[in-house]
Length: 76
Image 1: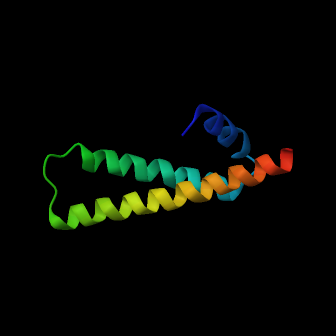
Image 2 (image 1 turned 90 degrees about the vertical axis):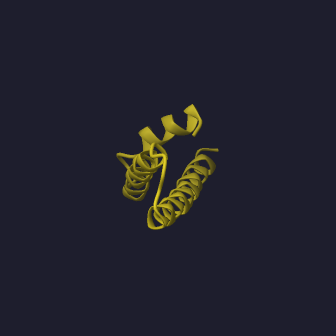
Image 3 (image 1 turned 60 degrees about the vertical axis):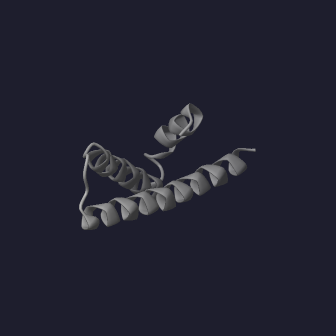
């Protein structure tokens, strides 16, 4: 994410429970993916879980982007 987005997220998190939840989830998925990505070999189940986490992270990121877009439109 861009620095401007991160700054806006930090600003909005105390006011927006949905954004806070999505951001916390995003960070959790990122951490879990990092753990998978550090490993040389993944079992079939682990590879499926990694792909699922990637999809969930992207879905959450899309929702975060939508919240940021709405906020920017309100500011204009």
